[in-house]
Amino acid sequence: MCSQDIAAEYAAEKRDVVSMLQFDMVGYPLGNKPEIGLIDDYTSAEMTTFIAKLIDEYTSVGHTSSRCGYACRCELRECMRPLHSEIG
Image (cartoon, rainbow, N blue to C red; front, side, top):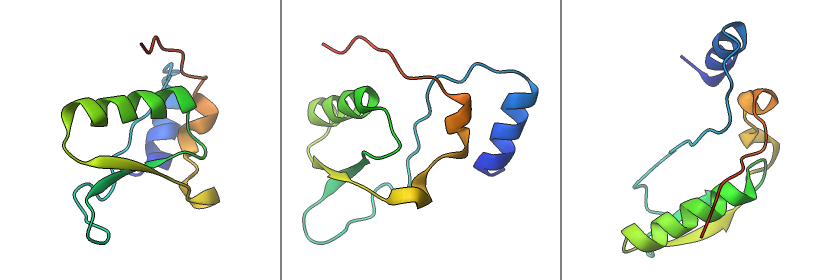
């Protein structure tokens, strides 16, 4: 099932989608330095900050910001409202 199918199903069921987290190519090393890339375009800055804090707290690798442009825009975006969270 691809994301377009999921978006159509959730819309038909009138589900209240407030966020989405996708793990793509997890563990795939790019170069010699292991790090986790965080996409920061078409995403929630609050959620990205929260995920970065989780990476810092629970892993031994770093993280880096990345942009991927229009290609990474999620079809679920129209179903989402901004993520509001308490990040300490």
